Image 1 (spheres, rainbow, N blue to C red):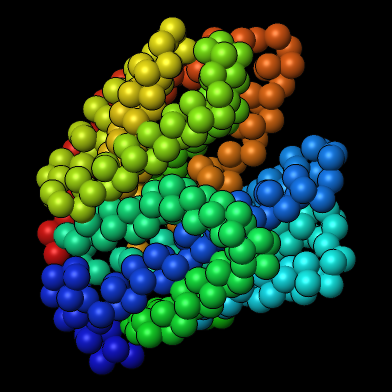
Image 2 (image 1 turned 180 degrees about the vertical axis):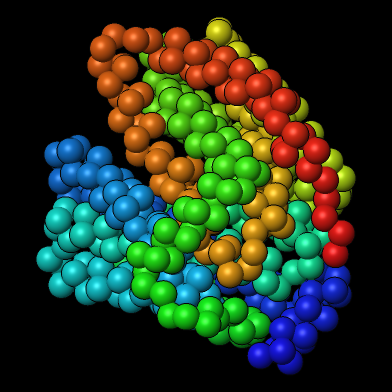
Length: 415
């Protein structure tokens, strides 16, 4: 065990791009994330093609979101108990095999809306275990002063995917049909799982006493409760996603269509601008080193709230495109330091649980944000008002946290 740990630490001291383990992790992410989006665009279009009932289309997203939300904490527990590489391998491989099942239904002309919803649910279960495993692997294969760059590079793959995945998927549907798009998605996820096998992790610390999963969960909550920085990071993650993700995802199509009388092309340009801004932010953080991560995070969060609120007051489509692109850039200046701070201050044996807590209150609770936004719209509240109020709240939260010395004083850790 000691030898394994020593080898990994020594490897982590080399430059990021010469770190064999991290390179295979990046390769896996470059296949996995775009592969998932290729599958997603295929599944969405297939659902729209086989049924006129748009209720099923909405269920496609809900079916993936609910299992992810319910099982993320369990995913964190398992990531701390078992080899994270094995978890990530099984997650990618299981998704590849699920696509094979879908291809069987397509080739036999027996695919139904229920099949797609069940597969979406199984994909959501897989996500709940892969997220904590991947996000807790980075600190095990990189030195602490390399985490910002490493997280930025991982985020780059995540931001390329919503741009590249739908473009590739849409083209494949047009030229090769559903069999072609799902075959490519299968190959990409299979290659990702194979790349994961080449990663070598140190042995994870094993407690002297065997604990039950319930005891592990209580230990995780106790650890988080005693760590004020962890609490602050998780709370910021919650507010950022709750007040922005739902209103922005639901609101942009409404604003483009109803307020600006725009087209699908206009909506695509707005959504692509978000991806481009986020990609630019990830590239910048991969290129420079933030010495005062906490200060940059809070300043970026204030600006993010202001630009977000401005969308609700904007009367010009081009201005909305520019605001959304800037938001994408600023979101990376918030999310990447948040992730890095949590990784650097968490004991390695607790990384899976802390990552799952963060994922639960951020990506996991996005469906709750969707529901609340939808209810407000049903009550007659205008989407522009919802966005403006959300932006103001995010700005106020950031301003309040300037009194939080744990965040404000956080600086880059030296490896």
